[in-house]
Length: 222
Image (cartoon, rainbow, N blue to C red; front, side, top):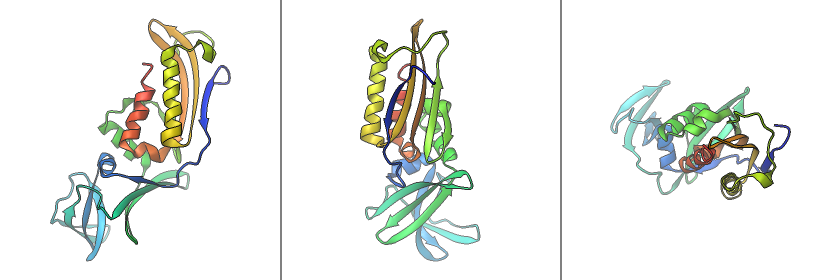
């Protein structure tokens, strides 16, 4: 992609952490419980439907007791998450903050959780075109099946320009950061021929609504 490309770039700051909702946690595949760990009050998670209220179980040498499975994030608490890189591998850490107390919930491979979320939401564009996941996530899509050279922006049809406007809005209003590189080779047999490379902050992709929006944009020219 060294020639004839159109670029939309917002060189903002990749967020170090982000707040999420219960619907996001559910889409990641977890239940949030209030109970005790080793007899002390705590919040903790288990895979969706795996545990029940009133259940006591042992995990990694500790005893857990579930008093209540939360339906919403408690009013005085916040669900937060961040991406960390350790020994070349990304991890999603998420925790619950309740006033001055922090309850670690899990540290997982973000690629596994994103796949779980995208499959649950049937976000096939994200599943098909993701290339790398770290602090940022890269998507690459190539639908070029003709011999041609990239067209200048002035020759882009209205539908293609509409996609570019959507990308600008996402970068400006939602992400605050992003890089979108696009080449358009024209339309043949009602098929748009194009290549794109899109880099976005990974944390935002754990938000169900944002993930749906990105998936929609990736499929707008299909």
